[in-house]
Amino acid sequence: MSLSKIVFVISIMASFLMLVASVIAFVIQDIGYFWMMFILMVVSILQNISVYKHISTTDEPIKS
Image 1: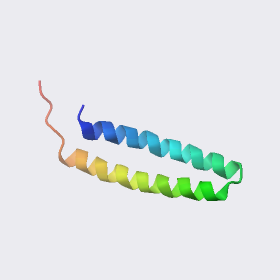
Image 2: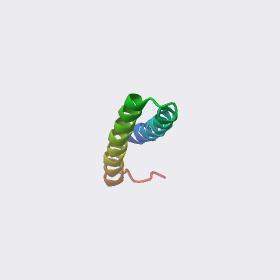
Image 3: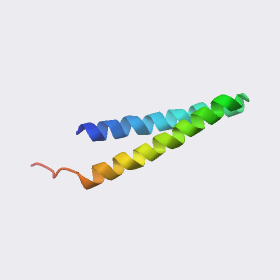
């Protein structure tokens, strides 16, 4: 497994955790923290898209 795929998986997990944190912040009425986590989640998703494009264009052939 290449390093870019590992970074991609970790980034997806981080995006999911930011979504959970923003929902919890919204429920407990901490609006400042909610917006901070929401913006970080959007930035992380945009980075995921960029990493996915990099992985899909530079994918190594399967070695047998």
